[in-house]
Image (tube, rainbow, N blue to C red; front, side, top):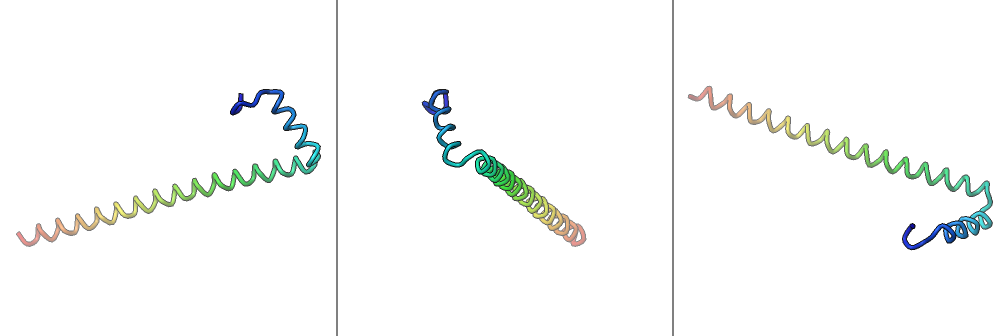
Length: 77
């Protein structure tokens, strides 16, 4: 099933974890883990958006320089 673990092994592992941490702490651990994953995804998405915005700004600047160069060439002819 999961990397060589069957259903029985997963249930035994879950029971041991439940005995060690208890239901309250296990709920908090799950909640904290979910918040951490959500924060990671948000950070990755924000980073991707920032990279795209920077790329668009660079390409706009390059296009502006090309347009200026073409205008200068037109006036010298």
